Image (cartoon, rainbow, N blue to C red; front, side, top):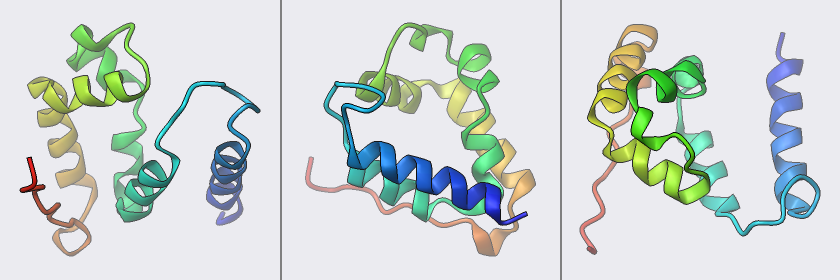
Length: 104
């Protein structure tokens, strides 16, 4: 059962180590992996649910990479459903408070 998440992590690391392997656009590999690492395992089914962006953030369709991430962050319906899903799937002790960035 543990082999599938480990395989996925290995794939993500290998793709990020060789950026030209699957894509040739610049990306934020370290930040993405750090965010995934800080996400509780119970929230993965919510965060990686491919239906949520389509249903609750239709304005983000056609965006990719950082633009997609920024759009999803600003999509209130998407954020609400994501919060609800994580609230149901994860116990309170597994949820973390994300510190706000005060440098802006």
